[in-house]
Length: 442
Ligand code: ADP
Image 1 (tube, rainbow, N blue to C red):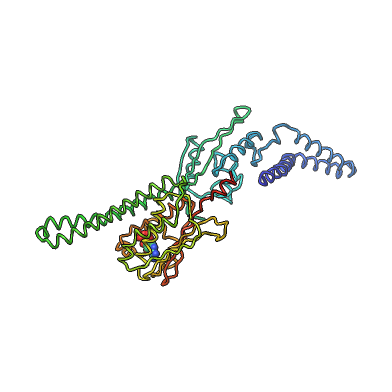
Image 2 (image 1 turned 60 degrees about the vertical axis):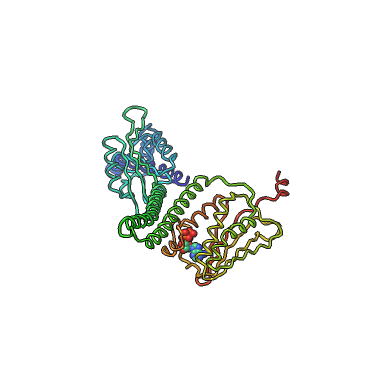
């Protein structure tokens, strides 16, 4: 808006100035003539000045009234009639991506707000190369100006941040009232390819990580098969040992494939919020019971602290929530084992009748996690210590799964840890509306 107003003021000021410039020779001749008459023909100064003023006024009025002569473009030089100017502005302003209208010699004719945002130095009437220094795009603009064929160029900018762009350069023909008033311009639009490129990079990283994770146990399996077919063919004790390792590797591959499939299934239904009523107290107890052999093996005591007067019911998918607490309790048993104790606490928040959230915290007293790792723990395949995770049968996908499941449940995962003093993983889930509240809202 402000830009438009400034442009109009410029137009008014610029128009008067241009009118003056055009009539300047006439005024000069008239001035010299009247000065001569005063000097050499004895004309009095007052009538001479009056005569000059009348002529000047007449010339300026005529100049202003002449159709088409003062209708110069708001873009500076007489490039096109006003109607066309407005058409260009309307077309450019209507585009959401950064867009520029350029003269065939690449001078900037118009640009929209998004264009100004990404190229603050851009200015009408100047070559676009003053603001956009991408040789391939400049070359394409010249080519389109000459050939009138559409061109596309992709480029990468490091400043102010890493961004990928696709420039589309197309001819723009503005019809005038007569054929010689038609204007050939060049339309340059920019599309931000950055989000697309980041997703592509993430996908290829993910495929590379998944293949790497699968390739390791596969290579180990092939190695043992060869050994069993060759040197260890008749060595019964070695065969038993190797078969046990092979079984472990095969289990690891199966777990990885299972986690990958679960992740992709959950991603597919990310926007569908599950709505079955799930009692968190009963579910957490069931998961803890299921993991009691592991707790026993690691010599860890698991304590559930649930002082809730009534059940904590949340809308959810039972199997997925089982997966969440299995992952968190299993991690606490695996990584926090040296602390020999895991506390699972269930509370509602706020603690009064207005409670809106259920909070389940899984706290271990193990070595904890250094602060720099905390923000990245839910990334796929991120592990603080890869060899320890592998030794524990981890896939590096557990917390990524937890995060995705909780997102689908409109829940959150919070991780707190003090190195040396253990870690707390807290799950927050919205509580199911009570029947009383439901009937009020009905
Ligand atoms: P993994 O399959 O490796 O266990 P997760 O996604 O479940 O994958 O966990 C990612 C990493 O987070 C683990 O490799 C481990 O380094 C760290 N981690 C998770 N839970 C704990 C915990 N309770 N204590 C210490 N480190 C943990």
